[in-house]
Image (tube, rainbow, N blue to C red; front, side, top):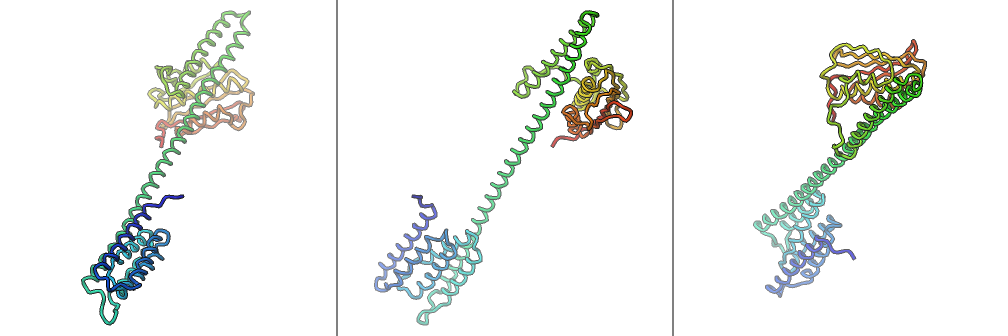
Length: 375
């Protein structure tokens, strides 16, 4: 069984107080009691109990009972209190026009109606009742506006929380994509390098042991570097940094090491200053070069490539070309090229990859030196 609401308890208390006032008025003037003294207060109280579900109907019933009560009933009970409460409820629930219309009609009837040729509400009483009617309607409108304001504030808070959660999910997705790209770059490049060096070691193991030893040494260093970078990336996932490298991330300052580890004979051309680059641009350039050279080693069918890096017009331009017969990716797709393109776009740049008209494959990246701030 549902428990009565606070509004019901308030209505019952008001009705009890009004009926008690009627009884008190009877004790003062018992000879004036008639049927209307009993019926009208009971009807008005019953209507008041339904004020929350039917505010306009309750207001009309209470107002009519009050208008009839004062000129025709024998007692002068506090029935007008029920009118004030009904007016407040109607205004509080948004029926302001009904409250103003009913209140005005009740005031006219109470102030200018006559019973037996005698006006039953004098000027001072009429002004006081008018003040209470206006106050009840105004107070109901204020409470409604305050409730609407609080609801709007609550909705704004919910919207802000929802936006914050969506932003957190978006950032988490971007971070997962970045980590996946890092893992692809680290593992894909280094494992490919290990594979190339292992093939060279096997090929020269008997005929040229010194070359095999150098290849194995390269495999050792490359695998060590792979494990170090893998621990660093996984450390980000665990939100710990005890395994993170303390040195600076690989960039164009280590270009010679990057080219030497690719397993490809690279002819390098540079123009413009390549030092003191923004950290994110420096890292992205190194990652793109490494991935592009790894693709040459894997897919181009040649062990030679040309790397051109230039700093011009506020952009770092990177171009990796080969003349091998391999198809690579005909439309510049694949996870490696997709990762390079995402790196460039994230910095406000661009990347194009595709076959050269004269044969081979070309990857061209443009990285602005002033990347847009992340939102």
